[in-house]
Length: 203
Image (cartoon, rainbow, N blue to C red; front, side, top):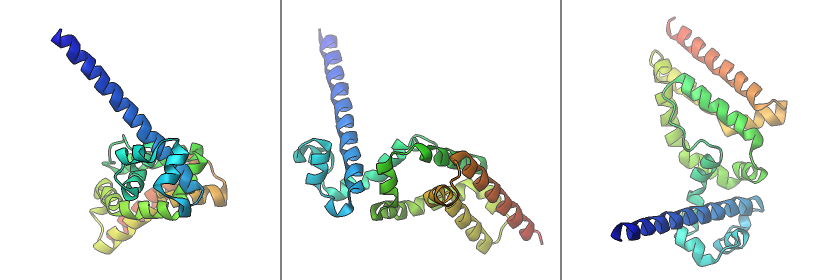
């Protein structure tokens, strides 16, 4: 009897958690759409209206607007399928993740594209920059090791820019390249830069 009651409790608990996760996702989807309509109108009531939930429901998931906005970066990573990926441990890992991002961006929802180029999208990227730099340095450790300090920083910065969302947009807007072709070009450029930097270090 106790076992049956415990199983029912677990079932209700997991069902409740699933409902909470769905509501949270619904709120974050609404946040993306609200930003797409203009950040000036961004408020908890505006997001609640867009999500079709009450204001107290939003506050059950996020204590304030700052916490809601802070959750957006991770949510966008999740939408792109990047959140579950392991950090790159090598150049090949880094290039594979970059390729995935370039290709995935082609099917990205228009509202998410608007968020990416918004002031808020810029803030999210700036907040994540120290972590991204550290990740790149770890992935490029073998390639950076033979270089002097200045060349290490220059190479890391070039790879950072070449694998950025701005580069994804540039390849599409200026050259109308597919994600695959753009990723091929970026991989070619990065490998060429690394080879040139290594040759320079041996002079």
